Amino acid sequence: MTWFRSRLLLATITALLISLSLGGRMIKLLQQFQIGQQIRAEGPASHMSKRGTPTMGGILIVMSVVISTLLWAKLNDWYVWIATLTILLYGGIGFLDDYSKIAKAQSLGLTGRQKLALQITVAVVLGLVLLYVADYKPNLSIPFVKSFTPKLPRPVYLALIAVVVVGFSNAVNLTDGLDGLQRRDLQPR
Image (cartoon, rainbow, N blue to C red; front, side, top):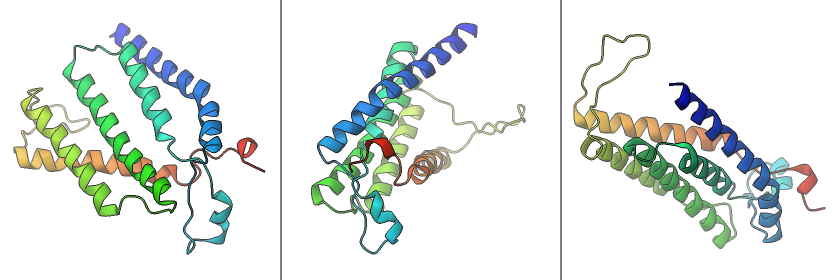
């Protein structure tokens, strides 16, 4: 267990160092290529100052997590690969959304339905992989109640996986907002 905690700490530090060392350069590069956020004309006037805020910061986050995972995780564990693939697939959805915004030069990328359909599809595939490839047992674990772990029917398990994974993904996106990569000292004057 101590070795696991050490590797977890080293992976966290590695991801932090990668993001700190590459973050500023990436922001400058995105600004140089004018890869920035478009703001809806019907939005609040206060948001107009955020036009051009670099977008696609998820690339840095995904890259930091994946590199540190590949360096420090036990690569012979199915769960490591499933989690890494899930991060890459959700990062791919974010990339498609941001790329669509840049290509159209407007604030509308993928529609909400398109994003949700892709996210649910990835989550259900994740659940199926856990059930059939990794031979995961669909038992419900309730915090602080170790003796009660009911086995879930597979459709309920897949629905629960979809709700949890899609919910967490969207919670992260909602907290990111428009200010993700905005730094006052790097903004064009």
